[in-house]
Length: 255
Image (cartoon, rainbow, N blue to C red; front, side, top):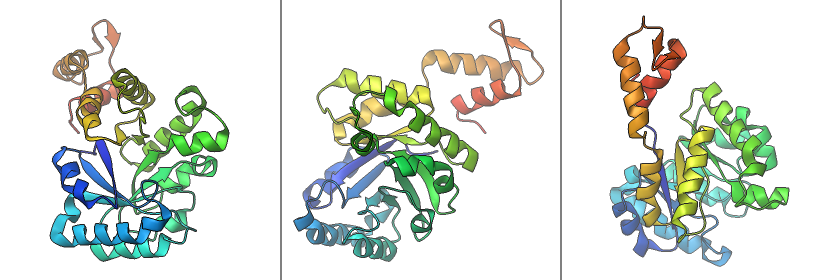
């Protein structure tokens, strides 16, 4: 089953690595990019390498610095040395993604959105993720307003489905104290077809996981559809055909 929660932890704060793992996040993302100041990049890389060297790669991923930055090559070498999954920021170029073993492509630029289908088709890419905060700056819109990003989100959802990937991962909710905002963000992302979220604090993990889980009403409907069998034409007064049955099975975690 695809991961639902991805928790970022600054790469220069090794004291927080274990706490991040203990949070119960599906994936702990050791961050070498936005969470680390330029002067601390080398220190962060060394701390991440030491952590991964102790056999913890199986519970971790690394967000490296973008291609074209002074730190990209050293970050890429670290990922290769430890065989750890990588989040590639500012994903725009399929050839860059092809150079890694297992990639979550973080789409956060206009060019990346327009190339979403090409990025999703790269063999090493296992998932797309959406970085709406960076895209907001490029577009000149407020990151808190979901409307300007409806097109971009749909592009990622369709590109993921076309490439046979799990549904994409939505961007962060930056307000750590507004629980209603977090719930609204996840609800909207789920409606748009996303199935995971980037998190910036351990306290977001539980609410995000719960919000992405099927509701009791959805589970009940799915059970009625599946129990009715392939030949039935209606459930609850609504038509049931092959796509409807497939959706019900997805909700129940079946294949």
